[in-house]
Length: 631
Image (cartoon, rainbow, N blue to C red; front, top):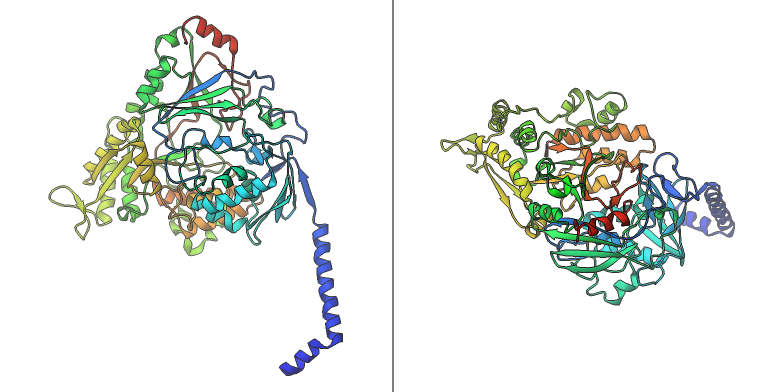
């Protein structure tokens, strides 16, 4: 049939009726399928399995529902601040700046990846999870008394895309193309087709909610992409009370907070005020703690923990020193190499740098033997890669084809090397490291300095803003020098360090990658290819098609076993990249506090909860003051 005949046939009344009928049938079929898809309505959401807490639960198991309200939590922060906007790459935000904003959902501290309604009372979504609707609590209020509405939620989502961190915006925009107001307290998020559904609901459920009216009242100065001292308006239980730049920040509990009685808040948010005192270094902070200028201290310095807690208030029983179990995944911390630097392009150089660090000597000689060596990005969990790859993990790796280094299939995962504890520089490891540098083309000249074929010197600067790190990093730098590397240690002020870290203007820093038992879309910001050039969550800039494919698999996983296999595979691949010198982990919380704090009998495994689960014992506080121990 010619094109003209075909067109006439289509335009005939009979043909148009047939086409119209077919279209109606197709639409009807689509509507029938949509109508038959089960809509799930719930008080919470779990990425895997069932929620622990049923609808209408009274409170979380790990809280004290009768915890008294009152008193003050006070602790120290180190460094400086020049902003109360935590959502910008510029400036350094004051402590707790982001905590003034609530979200639709709130995480449980005793279940991985489980969330319950906070500003949202309930949610509903199809089995396909193509969208989600949140039914908000009409009683929710911002700190100025105005209602929290669906308009505010949609505004906040869009503002983060337009003015927030680029790595966040790029990732979210592709996955969540539309947020829609369905009513004053009803909001819908649409998810892009043909992408995995994992963590999308929790992504939008965890988005901070800003006041649209507050931002629109002064759009030129009230933005997310610039530092500002105005804190903004949130709906959380605490609001900014006062501040003294670089010295102190004080928050007070909002007496008109809307959410005290809802189940996820029972037993929480117990202090009248939270005060954060700023110090230039840890020594000054420790002396202030001894004097009672602040009353709670979470210790992170092994030397201080081992030697500094012998002052009179300890002996008199006025200060309590405790070790509390930390059941969360240890943070993957270490000395991070900037993969954008040309001297780290060869993996043999990165391995040589790793070999220069002596964990055993550092731990025994400088850290009182208090730490354990970290090997894995999921240390001590079921997601840690062990032994040769087998079973589903091996299948996952084999499916990567030529994206994968074939040696990974026949090797055990890269482990942190062992070193002799009796001397700073393990000669065996340094010889192995120098051989690797030779092989990589960095040879030693007559002056003892390593250069490549172009005559460029092998230089490595260790950048820091933490005086506590001096005694740990400098022996490591000395070992690098022993190998012929022109290494240096440069400690700069907090503001400079923050800027250089954000701009990835460094060779090596002490850094970390946070991990979880339910890894998901956040992995794209940490290790993804698109965000690698600018993500503040990926200090090394590490990425690759092998990593990307495994992240895709993890995000797409709908079964726990599939998640585990792919996470183990990713752990194995990340360790093989050698972009970080793994250092140590503790597996517990070191805390010291003036004896007026108390906490629930069953602290949850995934949070210490000092700021929201603990409380002040008024009688003990009064006794400390009447005795003269505290002012």
